[in-house]
Length: 437
Image (cartoon, rainbow, N blue to C red; front, side):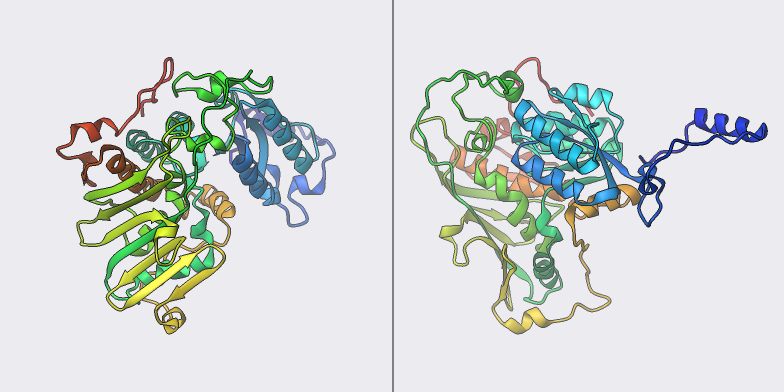
């Protein structure tokens, strides 16, 4: 762990040295002493995980792949099966049986002495658990979207700034070379002044009706899973499929905002601001418990004249991904190393020494660890993550109300629309409340 030698150990060693006594340590592997080019445990980032479902496990494995850069020591989940799998994975990597397990994040945060925490949870929990972790002054690798509501996001951003911790959002596209290259070409004017952007996202969440009430599986703490969300009976919809229910998520729209909208903002220089006018339409399931928009299409206008359209990929000319349109051409990027342009020669241009060089990372998880170690900002910090999800949340408000939303991105308030303003936050079920900063 990144800490100084304790006073007790220092005094003990000093007294022994003064008496001419040599204290022989226990025999430990050379790797634990930092020999053979490996980092000693005292210099490793001590980390734990809250949320060990599919995404949480994926992130955990990515951190474990960093070998001796981190020391994974504890995991927390409301599903005992996930918890057991996570412990087994950590213990196997550490070659011991020492990984501690928790079913309640509060106990985890109270008992563990950590440098950092990796958090991957349903969106409705983000406001509380992210803020609690940051208030403990833990560095956080937090999954996108960072919040379910604007109010939650504002609170998390304020907590990160006040506590001066390192934050890395799970917007890992920033650490892929072709996304970085596309954004860097755009921000350096290779297609001229940007006038229009398209962000194509997936659809999903089409109704399954209303499944019958089921007995809660013995491994699941359903009450804790629900947390601040409304009390409802268990219907077999929890892991993964929570994202199709508005109490927990905004569907693919909010799920993917931290990817393609984030990249759009990065290249256009919009990552520390927001739109001023948002309007659009959505299509929602007519019945059943799934109620997120299965289709969406909205337009954001910015104070500098840029317009961004966010829609189902099938509605857009270049489909999934981010497309920037400038006065001299366009650039499109997507997963699968997709990077194309109106003129292929644009992609060959060199970024000069005195031009803008965007932050570069080759490994998103290593970048977080390096940032924690050096105290420098990570590639996907908190405010750009908040600004990306704000676009989606404001679009959701426009679709919900059927009205144009007028947003003040400086003061982060809605102008002249009381109904929409009420959607900036959501009530929490007792006894839960958003932590203070």
